[in-house]
Amino acid sequence: MGKGGRSDATATKGQARVITKPSHRVNDEGAWISPYNPADPKAPALPTKGEIKAAIPKECFERSYVHSMWFVLRDTIMAVALVAATNACLSPSLPENLLSVDTIAWVAGWNFYAFWMGTILTGHWVLAHEAGHGAFSPSQTFNDVWGFVMHQALLVPYYGWQYTHAKHHRRTNNLVDGESHVPSTGAENGLGPNNERQAFYAVLHDAMGDGAFAAFQVFTHLAVGWPLYLLGLASTGRLGHDGKPLEDGEFMDHYRPGSKMFPAKIRGKIALSTATCLATMALLFKIGLDHGFLPVALWYFGPYLWTNAWLVLYTWLQHTDPSVPQYGADEWTWVKGALSTIDRPYGIFDFFHHKIGSTHVAHHLFHEMPFYRADLATAALRDYLGPKGLYNYDPTPWYVAMWRVAKTCHYVEGIEGIQYYRSLEDIPRGTAAKKED
Image (cartoon, rainbow, N blue to C red; front, side, top):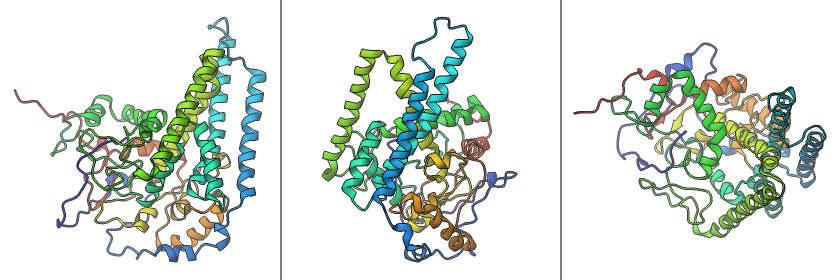
């Protein structure tokens, strides 16, 4: 996970073109490799956005109030049914004998509820995400009302995230002006000029070892990555809304109306989102005072953690792979960035999450397209972009891909030119810098 404020935000103008080669990890046995290499002299010419759109049936862009609201109703019915079933089978009170079969059943039951309720609520999260993009209905007011309600109920600052996520789409895989899961450099991860391990993740990896560090990557991303991102402490961009680099020690969070993430014109909306998050937390605290904090944790925060894990998993895997390029400002274009997106199979979870991970190329190219048309659009894109070597589909099971990314995608060498992820596993162990006497 990258850090928040960074000062090394711009490449030196006039320098020679920087092109790094993909890590040798792209040749790992059985690993998927992106077919597009922008540095290859034989790389295909990229189509324009208009040419790509012309390959997609026009009906894919038709938005429906009724169709979208049906999915809100469907997901809500599933959530209510699971709450009713859980309430009939489980008590929020701890069993009297903690060393008993009843306790094992109680723990297993509440974990079952947390996982599946979190999985269901990720569907609501995706629908609110659709609303933020304007894909939920033809009316942005209608979109914002429903998006606000669904996101704020999940402690998401709707307007703040709507703004930064739009920037993520505008600057996908842009190392300088990107947003969300922006790769950090080797220096930012504690590597010295000769790849000696000086601090931070580089030293931590050396101490933990390959497998433990990969597990740590998975945990930090899925368990705490989302709140850290919202607080401006991980994976944010390098530039403020005014295009200026952050100073050392500065950070951009989603809560302060004066955060450098946001222009002055939307500060009122940011304040509203933050106030609603605080009100939701205050309500949960009041319920905890009245009924106990354990029931609040079981009914709300267990699913909340799983929902956060799902959304970070999707955003992490949609643009991250050792064979997918990241671009400095001198190489980046909108089409290059959008075509760096990866579709992956998610099995049964596609049903619950509205295929957000398996049709994400289409979504990144045309975010205003409703998700229930994305299957048709993806088939058209596969036919159009696939023969050109421009469509990324990794058939690897998502959990295998997650582990591979956790082991191979730790940093980039710089923020200029064409960069590929590098792995700390390829830095010799025991190369910590020695302090001079």
